[in-house]
Image (cartoon, rainbow, N blue to C red; front, side, top):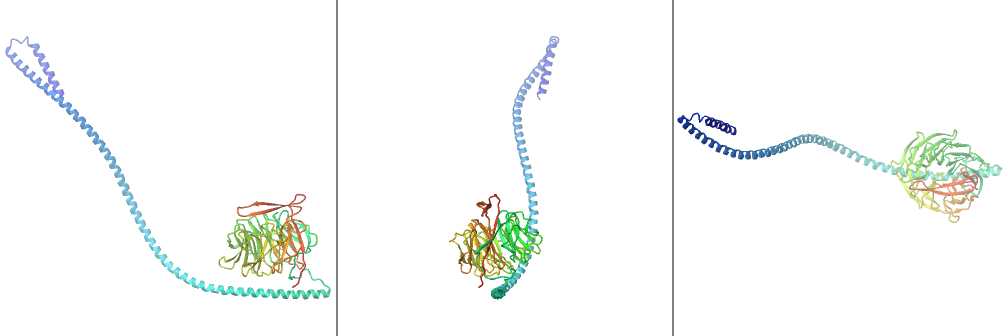
Length: 548
């Protein structure tokens, strides 16, 4: 619009200029001049109108520009709102899509849960049926168990009757044997013939009265000594990882070296036990194993492994079975024909010593660190056991050879507890306060005489104490000449009834305390002689035999 006005203005100015230039030449024509003047006036009026119209248009343009600016701002705001709405719409679309996907997943999960629910319902129905059948079976088993319990009680009553009858028969047999031995002694005395040394002898024993021999044994401490069943050989278990076998058929003769040394252990031998026939020997070791040696070849025939701690004791139950105890708080029963563990007992405390309590090896007695003795029948389906509490921590236990109803336990309270196995209580406590009897170590051993009437224990300063088990009376006997500490003792089954003690001493004894674990304190006895060599002494004592 502005351009059009400017073009008309330019054209008008051109016309006015041409008319002014041509006015002198055309003055003669007055008619044309009047027309031109009228035309010029018209044009000037038109130009003025156009000028006013232009001014109005300019004002309208300014207002239109302001309006256009406002519209542009509004359009910009609307564009921003549209963008925000678009973004919000996209987000809502995404959420909607996620919700749709979640809904689809939920529907799938619901369908899967419905299927699983149906499966569980089916399984529940099947379990209900199985439970009903098992309930019926359990009821039948309860009834059968009641019958079996009654039969078991009757069988135990019969076993008790058989045991009593066996004890009575054994007593009668011992009385008969004593009479026969007395008659043989009288007949041999009248003939001037001395009894044969190999003859079976079960007469009542008497305390040791005289030391008849002494010799050096293992290098280091000796933890246990044992006579063979016939009393002709002696086994010593030592800290030097060896078991030495000595020929003691003639104990009074000089003994310089062992006839056989059994090796193969990786740590100290803690206990030894002869088999019933005397052809094998069982030894426990601190290397978490027990071993069986063949005495004819001196080689290891079986290794009993499975304990998780040092094996403190091992004993024969029968010719084909054995029992071991360990610091890992277990007692294991072994089948030697298969070299396998057939039963594991969990007494809950470290095992110190075990022994066989019956002729068939079914009754096991074990002494534990928590001042208890457990009596377990391994024939029972469950680990049924009788617990006997002691006043002190036991160091060893012993039973007589005829498996009578007595058990001997040596404790750190410096006494011997005689336990009645029929009542499972301590019948009498044997002490020797007069001679200040003190137990040497946590592994000191006690022993019962072959007849079961005398109890023997050794202690510090060479003390040898012997008691009458029936009366509890302390008997007079011999003591070691040296002031050494005695650890182990054993009785021989040979007719001359020798006693054996182990003295961990030479010319100087030094007692050291060492903490081997968090539950038990043990004592190490260092044996130092004039040449500063660790050694041990074995003492033999002879006693008279008395017939009753």
